Image (cartoon, rainbow, N blue to C red; front, side, top):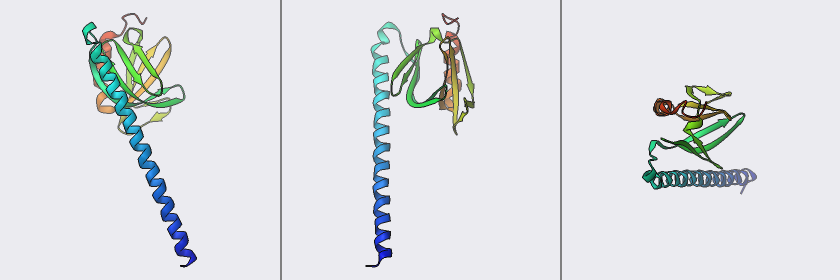
Length: 150
């Protein structure tokens, strides 16, 4: 076997290993997002007796706060914005003083996404969701603005 064939075989083997690692990472990520979605849905269903209901179902998002971006699953209920990422955060709608939609936020721009930017006394957070979903989020948040956040 020539040296060229050995090098080619080594490169093919290396690419195969890298491809397997990428597939494993993608599957683990999808499984984590599915688990977060199921947990949010179960929690809101459990709170239905006290009147909480989903206004916008759980969806994948990128959360931008300051210069930090993280992946998460977000959902909007009539009481709060649920952010389930590496850490769990709930933003009560009563604390939201303003909401707007914009194409980019803090220097970030994603194809096919729009940022729903929530403003509270604690600062702003940009939630990048599918652009088609942003108007529904804003319409659902607007009635809650000014009910305790000012």
